[in-house]
Length: 126
Image (cartoon, rainbow, N blue to C red; front, side, top):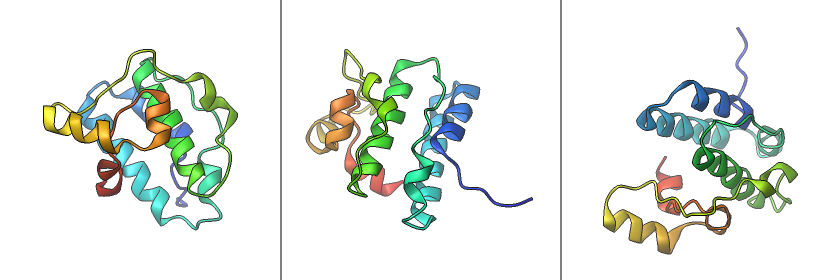
């Protein structure tokens, strides 16, 4: 078996197969870890193909925010599929009020744009 890095399409399929939010977050962190280890020239290719819906608009918006945030780090335009995955009501995944306040201040622009308030510290710590 040959190693193949996880793409956002792969991540979406795994998220759809698991309804437990704790497992879903672990999958997101696993994706981010694999992404970080890939060669910079390969990283954008892991984000370009549109993932299927997870059947939860919050997680669909999170995938779009991830794609937009990570492509911006390469000074690239976001994939076109990200444009429509925007929440009407903001989502604060954190449970504690202090974490929500932190996310309100430190959420990266791409995440705020998609209505997902997740602190940049959480993305780095993953």
